[in-house]
Length: 63
Image 1 (cartoon, rainbow, N blue to C red):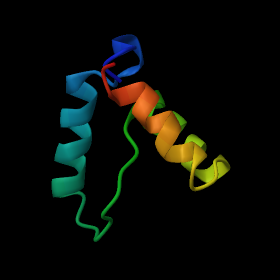
Image 2: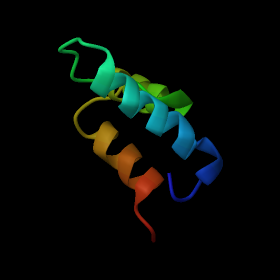
Image 3: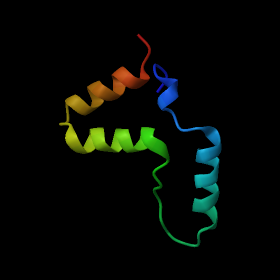
Image 4: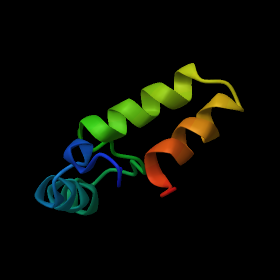
């Protein structure tokens, strides 16, 4: 989220989730961390195969 850093999850939230993943005793492989991740998941679920990569590139690639 380089263009909009305010959307990015704070590092401490990510670190807490990594710790939880490493110590929760489950085999869960994916953890959603923060509003930015929820937004990206929503975008992927609601976009077609052309629209999704276009949206991702707008959020992450510098022009």
